[in-house]
Length: 149
Image (tube, rainbow, N blue to C red; front, side, top):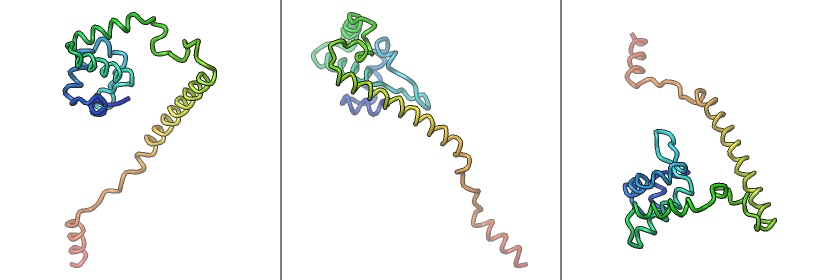
């Protein structure tokens, strides 16, 4: 998942332009956008590709709403069971590629589990990592002065 700033760099646009493209393509992008911490928009790889296609259509002379319509039409022509699951539905894919994709999926699942575990450990250990309160220089001076008298 990438943020708006990273998407803007990948697409060669400003962040404001990316926000505008997202608002225009919201019906197409709704399943590819999530909100992260502090309600920041996060885009997955498919959202970046859709925005890249919108930008390509726009550069070829279409308006952004026309570009979104073309993309929506091309998505609706695809069968719903094949969208987002190319590895499961590719019958003509060779066995080495299928094994490679299966290994990749297993690695991703293992990394997600490890990340969840590490986040739990960070949450558990965070209270122990807080520094002890510091005394200001003036309070140290006042204590020494009181002790001298």
